[in-house]
Image (cartoon, rainbow, N blue to C red; front, top):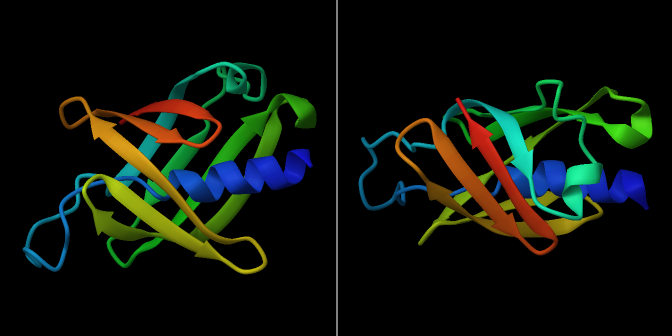
Length: 127
């Protein structure tokens, strides 16, 4: 169950937000780049080793990768890759074989911080 939660979380995090690429194909999505997990709301705060740098990377070709340090894994790295899609209105979706589509919303605070809200919690990332 914990592995499913971690996979769900990793994938859901790729479901971040920005402007819709169809509206302005030349505009870079602000989610692009590598982000570091800096905070997790309860009950997620016990799931992550926040003293380690868990990361999410969003690529311009709608692929991405994540590395999380989990308490259940004795703070060792757990990595995964996937795809993400900007759905507009701060909603992103990622499709994962077996698990289906996962959605979440992102709120940016400037260009170097965002919060990701999804069913199950809120995570905060910084560049």
